[in-house]
Amino acid sequence: MTEFTALGLAPTTLKAVAATGYTTATPIQAQAIPVALAGRDVLGIAQTGTGKTAAFTLPMIDRLASGRARARMPRAVVLAPTRELADQVAESFAKYAKGTKLTWALLIGGVSMGDQVAILNKGVDVLIATPGRLLDLFERGKMLLTGVEIMVVDEADRMLDMGFIPDIERIFKLTPPRRQTLFFSATMPPEITRLTTAFLKDPTRIEVSRPAQTADTITQYLVRIPSSDPKAKRAALRALVGREDVKNGIVFCNRKSEVDVVAKSLKTHGFDAAPIHGDLDQALRMKTLAAFRSGELKLLVASDVAARGLDIPDVSHVFNYDVSHHADDYVHRIGRTGRAGRKGQAFMIVTPADAKGLDKVLKLIKMAPEELALDIELSNAGGRRKPVGQDEAPRSEREDAPRRSRARRPSREQSVEVEAEAPVARTPEPTEAPVAAVAASERPARPEREPRLRQAERGGDARSSRPAPAREGARGFGDDIPAFLRRPVRIGA
Image 1: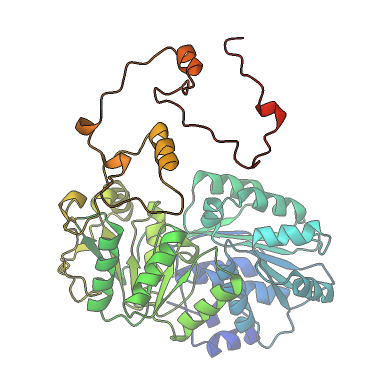
Image 2: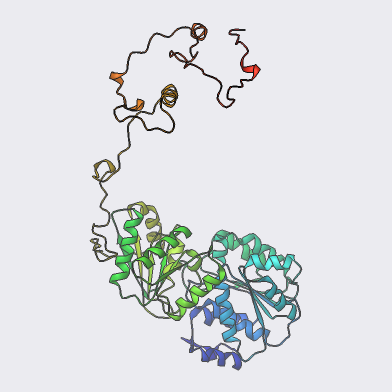
């Protein structure tokens, strides 16, 4: 174990670290900090929850201590894939930079751009930003990147997943070539390798664990249910949360829409839960995270926007409501628990439809989680009376199922005849059956059709075998019939 005092950090920085309660550096911190202090590029590969944020924040503070910020020209840029991760980095910077005169700005979407511009105009040492908002402000002429001395990319593989690689390349090209680059990622897919080859100068590669390895402090469980019905999955989740001693926990779903449904289900059944995903207002997202960090909120239902990088030190449980689309995401999800040497538990609900996804996860983590036998008689989980997975009776077998009427609709001719015979303001006599309800066997045989010309000559409707009703006059004109209605009709002209 390496003490922070042996890493070459300045006394002011060491004092700030000690104030947070940390005395021993993690492996990624112990190897990356001395290299970064020497001004060399770093390529850090470490699983989530290993202290990567401090690994680049602490040496950056020391290197920027001697200098001064200029208006609209930041001296360092930290790029993060999500607003929540960027906000977390900003909190770490503010915590470790105590006792220095360094200034910083957080540039993320969903908040006032005017306030961010005002801070940039005063001059900041460090910009902590998401790629989209940084480029937006740059294109508006609100900043210059020609003075950047240190460039940090955090969670690079997540940047790749979210489609930010073109933005990252453009930002790199806007910064001076003689800059220091600190590049951190949990995995190294080929696209990330290409990026590091293009923009890092002879980096020191630091890999403290194999990619996508789960922490030993996490006990993993597999919960199989026999049905893929969402109602069954929600009932199983409630049963899990109810049977475990959950201090606080994160529930992960694959889709944003599912996040809202699961959170509402938990709240309806008496659990303290709230959703968080990319479609929610930024102020609400920050408020929800703050409540979860402080312990006011017990369950956070999240999409993968919260799966990476969020440093909430004491999460006791992680529940995978859905098997993740990408196997790597499973590792990052459960990495929210069991952090900093603490113990944690992770559960994954698996349905018959999840066979392929489960197989990919098991091959990646190279272990078989313990299978948990869940009591699927969920009468205590939300008051359901039937076991999970029990199929409902077919609709035709339910006594209370509404039956679709098979009565034939009246034809157009029948409808016209009914309207002609029945006065508008009078209800038909009870003894008269509606035309549509007369059985086919009781209807008189339809007479053989005559040629339409012959029907028209004797005053009948050319489209029907019935004689036309006597016309007493044109409706709507009273006794005054216009001349054009008195003209004889020529047939077959």
